[in-house]
Length: 221
Image (cartoon, rainbow, N blue to C red; front, side):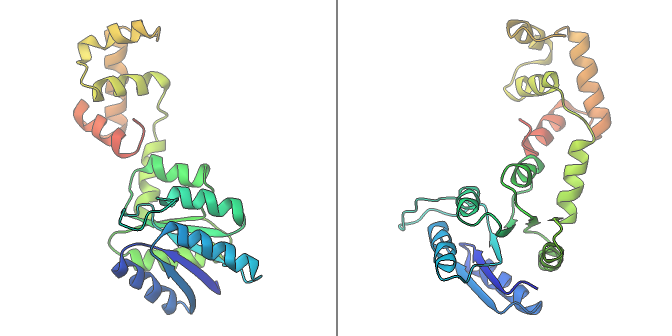
């Protein structure tokens, strides 16, 4: 199991809960910080002392306060840490549930695990720890299902344009005009209705509003 873990979490109760979970799986050497700048400093100092951390657990969202920071969020912290210690394993522990954002964390930022703050998150964090220690990646079950659902439909550039226009308040009947202005084909109303109908059928929605809300939630638009 991991020997040395750094926790970046600005809510004290959540921080204590994570520490307790780590102790339950036998991880004793933990350091917790409330600010991203401090987290990066501890990573650097540990490397300097030739006692690097094995794992970073970080939130994505950090509240601003009187203590001004150069690094204000978890994504920036992950990028900065990767530049300093590329092989450090990272678990994001966050309430973020948009599958598009989470996929970006894996694909662009190279994290190894994602646990959403929700029911049974302590159990899911334990599962993530064992999975990462076994050199595999981990997503909590609800996130895995959300990503699977998102990927069940391959959204085309036309789909994204149609959905973005609907999200901006453009009426469905007026979408052809906007698509023609952007030289996007096909732009006929019947083609738009077919694409919307296909997306709603595949994803289980009956209204455009539901489809648009879902696509916002997963970070598609």
